Length: 259
Image (cartoon, rainbow, N blue to C red; front, side, top):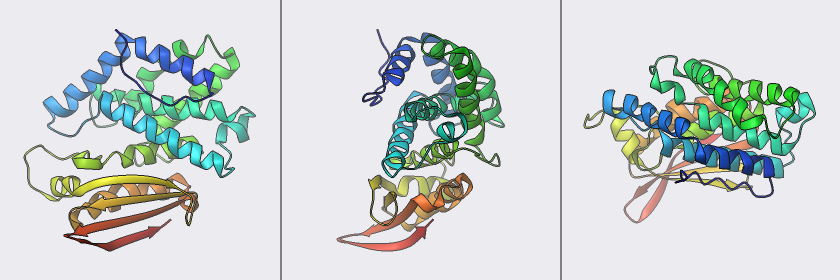
C-alpha cells in the first residue's frame, strides 16, 4: 500500500517521479514516524512527523511557484544554469528531510537531518539526473535542510523558502515553536490562538500572508519564528505579513509586518 503524500507536481515529470518513489519508501516513512515518537511521545512537543512534512512541502512549493510567476529566479538557475523544475525538486526534498534528524535528538537536529538525508537523496535522483546534476541538487537540498533552523543562514532562495514554509505550519495549534502538551504558558496559548494561515498571490508584494487569530497572544508565534525566518531568508521584499485578531463580530489588525 502506497503512503499518501499528495504534492501538486503539475507538468514537472521529475518531481512526479520523485514523489512516486517517496510514496513507496517504507524506510523513509518509518523515520518520519520515529521523528514524531521523539517529538510527541518522548518530549511532549509539537508534530515533526509525516503530517508536518506534507504540509511544509506543499507550502514551500506554493511559495516557490508564486515567486516564479513573479519572475524571481531560483538560486539553482542563477548559479548552475538548471531549470525552475529543478528548484521545485530542491524545495520539496528540503521539506521532506528537514526534520528527519529528530530521530536522533532535537538539539542540532538539522545537522543529523542532513546526514540521514544523503542516502535517500541519491536513490531518489540517480535515475532521472546525471551524476553531476545529482551532486548539485544534493548540495542544494542539504543546504536547505541545515539552513531551515536558526542560527544557520539560508544562502539560496530555495533554502529561504523551506525555512519560511516550516514556520507557516502553525494553524490550529501546530506551532513550530514547540510547547509542552497540557502546559499553560505563552508558547501553548499563542499556538492555540492561530486559526488560519492564508497565502495570497499579489497585492502589495508577490506573496501576502494573512494570519487570523482568536487571541492577540498568537502574535508571539509570528514575532518569534515567522518574522525572523523571513528576515534571515533574504526574501523580505517579496513578503507582506498581516496578522488579525477576531473580536466577536469584527476584526482588529493588531500587527502588520511589511517585510
